[in-house]
Length: 350
Ligand code: DOR
Ligand code: ZN
Image (cartoon, rainbow, N blue to C red; front, side, top):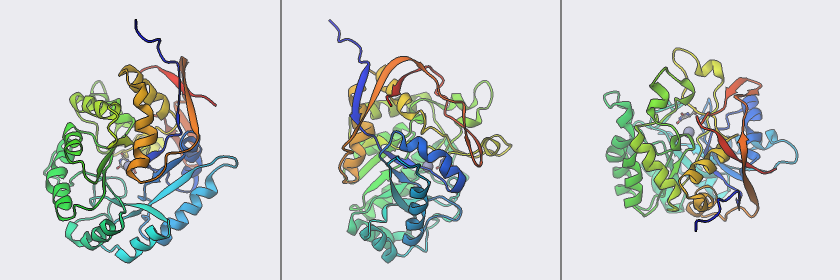
């Protein structure tokens, strides 16, 4: 006898451990979609100009809270954008005062607004030492930027050339490998238990590189790190549904307006906060692992960040096919919603 299929699932309220909220009109347009389902999110600092100092992070947090609609609750967990000029004392203050939860490392030139990022990793060593001392995590965009390295290999090369040396010199530093996209990264995280976690996005669990390039170019699936071969997507799904607490949800929902996506040199980013929980429930359901969705979306992230899970819950319900708008309207223009390419049956109950 097989168990009856699950059609309702109540889990602790999830958090998003990697999110781009932008600023001003875009912030106002996208924040309600995250706050509708998520309790907290790690907020990426790659604004223009970037959020580098404790003071800047504090003002950005104020702007986020001011953009939150009345009656909604949401806690932004701020990050500082690491530059070669970052002052360890400022990082220490941001941590001690509860202004910033983590520091974000972008290799210079790796992605959107990363030009102020790090070129010479030795120059940020004093900051990393301080972070290890105070137990503040480093969120890492793990791709090398060397033009000689193929874009599909940049994550795997980063692990060998940058991440391993950083962790060797600083084994006490707590590191989150963000938005992992390869079997190589999954294996590395699985084999190196100490002080290491990884976020996985919704879209990387669903698309591979064929979805971007086969049968016409699909700019709305273009993001960084770029989606890889099918075997890598399968490795990510296995890691996500496994219940292994080192892998947790970071949507990397990264809104860009359609005109900025649909041009000769389009921006990288997938906007998924609105339908992420539906997509994840479908992925976990198909894998026969719905029982591990709470671990991935609601428990493992807080555990890594030494925070309690959210007290309240959400309920996911399986029923008729649910639809989401193709685009949401923001004060900056339309933003296309991630299309998983298959019907969604799960929705978050109001
Ligand atoms: O696809 C991406 N978009 N990857 C990133 O790392 C940055 C993000 C953005 O800010 O648009
Ligand atoms: Zn991101």
